[in-house]
Image 1 (tube, one colour):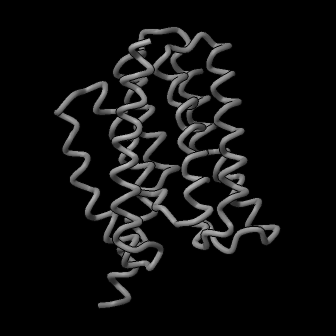
Image 2 (cartoon, helix red, strand yellow):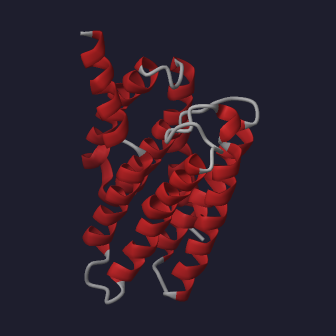
Length: 197
């Protein structure tokens, strides 16, 4: 039973992982709001490359050369370099989105991904926050900004994801709770400000 529960927890962690959840949220937003725009697929491609392909290639490469011990980067001390590189990737993506005349909302995703990754990086110097929870709830906040209260059901998966990260001994309760709470609150607040300019 213990083996089965661990396998299930691993499945949850992979299915509700940043490289799956964020691109799915971006695709939904692009299709709902910008599908009529000629460049909508180009905009999504930049978002997808920044949120999924580049991070996966980065982590795979770092594991290959022994800079990280596993794909989840379990050890806090190993997170600084990949997070720093991801800041650069998101800023490059933001500049590319501006060149492609992307809507302010879509370019803002990459800008605030860079900003929030810096914040996570600073926290990581002293503490280990759950990036899984942060990414999931910040993605839910973006969907919520577009669809309203009808999307709040997405938050029902938060306890399951918290359980999976705790069960796998990747985080403790507070690390998952803080990651989830800050992820939603920060992204929502940032975009309310960003879209009011």
